[in-house]
Figure 1 (cartoon, rainbow, N blue to C red):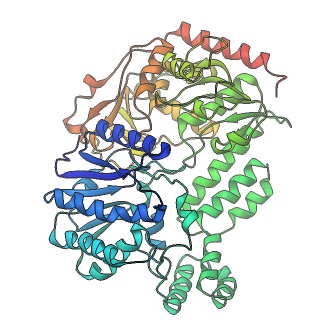
Figure 2 (cartoon, helix red, strand yellow):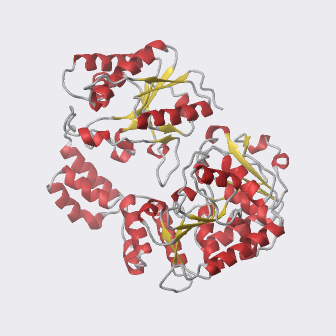
Length: 574
């Protein structure tokens, strides 16, 4: 663990069911991370509204700072989570650290866009005089104010008073976990904010309309969006807010949504038109999104049929995470059918028969799901007991299912990824070198490779990219990886491998670690967990890390035959 002796995480909770449960989750996570914390119970007097409860945060946070004069004190809303604490945040040297309002990127930050500067759900106050004056002045403002307001109103008031004398650090927006990104921070929202919009004191945006218009035109021109000049001018004539709407339409998020929706609906011509569009991003980002869409189309049209199998898998980040995309690869090959992507967030409303397979995605199974080899990443996960469980990754997931009062129709275990040698034959060779393959959440680790190492990307979604990646792995003497399914593939093909992690990112991969043991028990190999290693491979004995165990051919054949049988039996279900 990183040194966090001078850090205190502070929060409070109320004794209702939602916040009490969130408190327990937060405390359990901070205990796991070995980070000092204090979480107080706030008893709500009768008649106290949510906004009044929120402003209590100023007084209680101030008191936590007073009681810990030598510590850096972080406030976190109790329904948020810290997956791990990056060293640069734990050891920040500025007066204040936090996310920009709305978790904005630098391109979307500023008083011309936002009425307030900081996102109040996670903010760190140093032990410097200026930092402590910031929180003290916020308390003074709170005591003096007689109207309705929440905590972030007083943070903003104090910030505007003191910002000229405060040093500050903005946490990158990528550090917030989203469907497309894994960061150290997970945001929770009870829904109370929307209920009080318009009822509490707000700040106004600082009107820099003229400079904003000029900056917008300049930015669009630099990005080669001259074709949109007239459209932008019309937007600007309608005001800054309208200009923002037009700019947003050109954003990556908007582009990706249009491309993926077109792919899911087999609208190839629409994608061809979208390719011609300029977006506010590097070409590589655009190409990754287009590659992701191309892969969706490939599996959707694999067998040239009009009725593909609905299959749930985790499709992000673009162009696709290798392990997650093994699911459509394997199911199409064994069933000789096309598959249609049902995204995890659509599963609750999808009521037709569907398959949930590779990955820790059993939690997305609904009452119409057939689960084939999926698992969970946390023991406390709730599973739908009405789904049909024909195969699970391992017996630990089975226990999780039983705790949700569910049962397996057939007690068969194993990760379907182990059948890849039966689906894709690959020649084994030795180039005298070691391959490093990182989990996509570890791309930010500052790693130094030794002279006999190469790094391979875990991002692969199309059939050709998946096969190319596996072929590359089979050329190396050994593989060091922090990606679970890269390790599983190595054990299936008989490539010596080590599953590793790094101290600074040890909690970057989702889950409590049970999935590794669950997999091992399911396929009959020795149980393991990732080994924590240094970031410089020149000081590591790689050979000492390696595991030479492989999944037995008997287990591979048994699992392959079972999948063939099951998919053949259900061919009329879709």
